Image 1 (cartoon, helix red, strand yellow):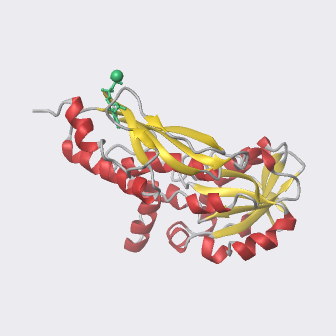
Image 2 (image 1 turned 90 degrees about the vertical axis):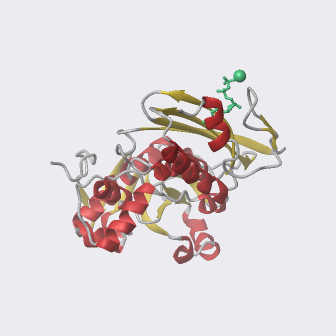
Length: 322
Ligand code: ADP
Ligand code: MG
C-alpha cells in the first residue's frame, strides 16, 4: 500500500537535519515557529530543481536531496550568512520509498554538516520537482552584496570552476574520462560543497560577492553590473582541476571554467588595500581561492589573454553539443 502523505512526512522529514534550540515548533503544525537572534538580519533564499531541467532524469536521489539544499546554502554563503532553517516543497510522481529514503538522507547529511534544521514544507503529487527555502542570519548590515565592488578591486574565485559542467556531461554520457576523473567530476556535479566557511570569513574583506551557479563569466558580469562597473578575467589565471584538463584539454577546460554552470563556488572582489590582510588571514592555499581578474570602470565582462580580448559571446550552454 502506498504511504499516506502524513506517514511519508513523518517517516522522512520530521527528523531531517539537526535539532536546533531556536526552533520553537517544527514539522507537524500549520507553520513553524522560529526564534531569530537579536542584532541580525534574517537572510532568505529559495531555489527549485526540476527533473530533467536542473538535473538529468534518473539522477541519484541522494544527489537531488543534497543539491536542492546545497544551491540554497550557496546563496547564503555568498551573502556571508549563517544558515539555520530550511523548508522543503516536494512534488513526487509516486511514493517510491527507496528513492525517498535516499533523497532524505542526501538532504539530511548536508543539513547536519551545516547545522540546518528542516522545519516545514509541503508534499504534493506530480512531476518530480523539489524547492527549498533556506533561512539564516548575518550580523546586521554586514551581509556581502553584489553591489559593493569598485574599479580596481581584485576579483577572486574559490575552487576549480568548470568541473561541475564536465561532471554533468559525464553523468549524461556525453563525455568520457578516466576512472578517477569520472569519479571526481561526477561528484563535483552531484554533490557540490557550498562554501559556507569562506563566505562567513569574507565579511570584512570582500567588497562584493556572488555565488557561481550559471558560469563564472556571466556571474562575475552580474556582480560587476550590480556594482555599476565592468570586469576583466584573465584567461590564463583561471585555476583548473587536473581531472578537468586531463579530460577535455586546456582550451576546453578554460571555456568550461568560464561558461559552465553548477559550480557553486564563490566569486568575490577585494579592495587592493585589503588583499595583503586577506592573504594573511585566509591563506589561499588553505582556503582554495585564486586571483582571476579585476573590476574596471567600463561596463561589460571581458576575458583577456596577454592583452588581447577574447570572444566568449557564444552560448556556453551545450559544451559537448551533438
Ligand atoms: P497543511 O495542509 O496545513 O499545509 P501539511 O499536511 O501540508 O499541512 O503539512 C503538515 C506538516 O508537515 C506541516 O508542518 C508542514 O510544514 C510539514 N511538511 C509537509 N511536507 C513536508 C516536507 N516535504 N518536508 C518537511 N516538512 C513538511
Ligand atoms: Mg494546515
